[in-house]
Image (cartoon, rainbow, N blue to C red; front, side):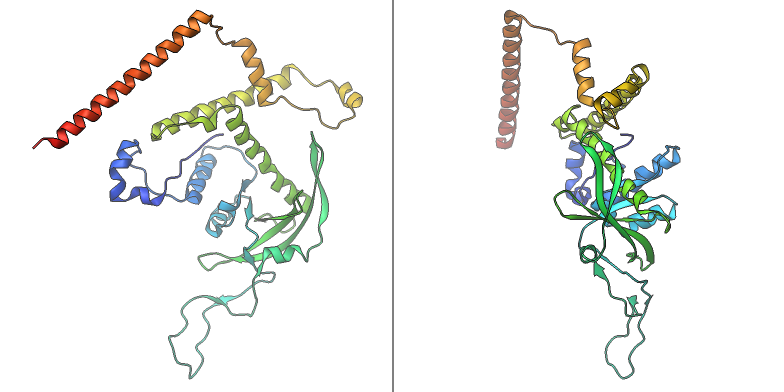
Length: 327
């Protein structure tokens, strides 16, 4: 993880929510931004700081946004964005224009761009039934060889700004038999194997987030303050960097024995996992073992502190009630 931004609903920025924003310490300079706008901001920042990356992979929340994809394409950034199965595309290039007014026809003249060459759009789900899928080998994995049935074709989409763009449509059959769909601005000569590989690369991003939640405690934040979220996310980012560096150090100091490939008859030996690193940390940073007397004393201290907190809240409530009854 190199960056993160918190999405806030648009209604939080109206006048009625001003006190709530102050109470939750939301920075005053914060303005409303959609999820796709926040995503683009992080991409521009990563690019401006020289962070190397090959392609932007995203789920359907971002991939379905034509303005998001067009912004990446304008900057010369490759993308592979998932889309819902009800997105409409054109299998032939449409021509946009304002239809001429029919002589003698009453009503307001046309003023919006429309497809004027008779090309009809289709749902991507209907295209999957007509495409011939080919098994594509992606990579060896711990569950065996990763192979997906895929197909790709060139399609045309129309942006919200009325611009026609040619893109790749990648269709992939999932293990449960359903189809997933993605759009990409890869070069028209890109082979199917490359498109399928790019589509599968986002797995490692999703796995990183999964490990951060299950192993590093990213999902255990319970707070209402913006600063608390900021600090908690920053600590998780540092933890992920530590994990990544530990994996690299382990691979450097403990290279894999080539003989194991032949003995175990596998193409790839597993790498160090986040769970493995957590177990090693427990060994070098053991928790203090309390005696029964120390544990009892600690529990009594916590109970007393909780009672004191309750007493403070009761006093604050009583003072508030007395003030409300004063003439």
